[in-house]
Length: 289
Length: 336
Image 1: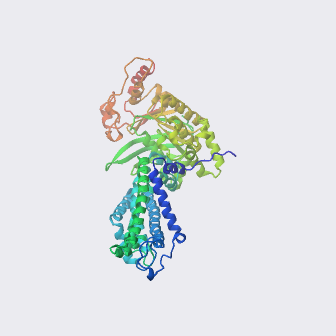
Image 2: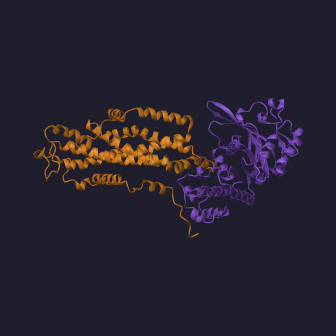
Image 3: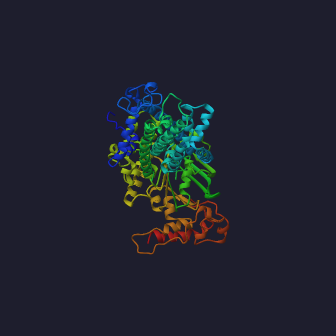
């Protein structure tokens, strides 16, 4: 058999569904800008004109100029460089939160739906309880136990965001599990792992993508808020949330550059991510019907 | 009928209750059946008579919370005692199922090829062989451009084609028993004939046993060796197809035979009065008592046990008295 037909895998349909089509220019532009932001964060060491933590008291609190695009802060650090470096932690945090929350949330949801019965009911109630706690509250509790920094808030937010993912995935997977084709899989003697991984998961991943994206935006905001109140990464490390807070002293002294630039970066990123997330959600909903 | 051989499937006094809104409702009262290797058994009954539940019980795939009593042996082994692993092997290798609505029973995101190959590839590493076998089977069920179909998705195929794919999927597994649950009901009439002919031919060629579940008595009579008539969760009559068709021993079977429409006669369509009762609505007596034209007091209180009469197994108190009456009735209906 030299001319064995290649059997395409399930991914084909889904990618074509996620493909950017005409009429989606807004989403295409959003994705492009977002890609630039991510690239800037990765390439920060190459792009930044100054060392982000290099203080220079002689050139403190300078207004924006050609040598310092956004001016300098109270300690004479270049705000533009700090903004570029700040993007790294500000984006890495939500990324870790989203990836872990999506992984654990999806696993919990599909496993629970597959087992069903009382186990599923218990998991669903547990998620509801977790869902009732504000994410910031969970993060603040974690910080009060493990101390401020990058790790504690991120891990706390993974737990906080898990129910956001798991509840949505559970509802879609529950519907999928009761469809006839899952019965026919069972009748063919397939294992639970195979049915969940190869049949249920591909049919719910549109919803996972949408919910994950929206969670990313919320997680970014939460982390920025924690940094703003000083519970995030500690000085001199920069991230957007702490920059808003550091710049707030200067805000009323006529030097709003740092706060505005950092807030602008946060707002821009969150809006772009949400735009994409909303679109993914409408598509997933349309597929689910 | 094949005497002497050990039955492939033996069901004895199967009784199934399902939880419906906080209470258990009986959907199958008492079903006893055997299917010999290579035999085609037709199970005929109206909707809600418990035909499909019987099939699901054979697969050990009843809805959550179902309570099952009675014996259900496959090849001498009780299905209820299989552990998880053996049960999977039993479903994968011994029994295959064909459904009324093939479209709903296929993952819409997967191609026909991936649907057909998933089972075989669990058993063998040789993908090329598996593909060749699938293509061969598709051709045997009348799909000529099999290679092209492998790359298509379920929504691109017609119902008739999909049902052939379903049959191919069942045959590829090389089972010993096929459960066909209303395999032609969702198809248009000409496609129905083709599909059932293919199914019957393949079962005969491969000496497969088949349980054909249908509400169409003519279809069952055309394909099956033996027919079991089900009503409200009870098998009321079980007999060789020709004998049942020519001389029913149960009033319900006679009523079904009489109420078939005829194209060559301008007569008023005969019907069975009343509506079909569900199994859980049946009283203590005969399940058919409320609609039976020959009902007597005894049948309203005592449920008739299935017993043998002229080679039929029939559950009716008056089967002997009614022999002549039912014969004349069915002769009127079939000849005329």
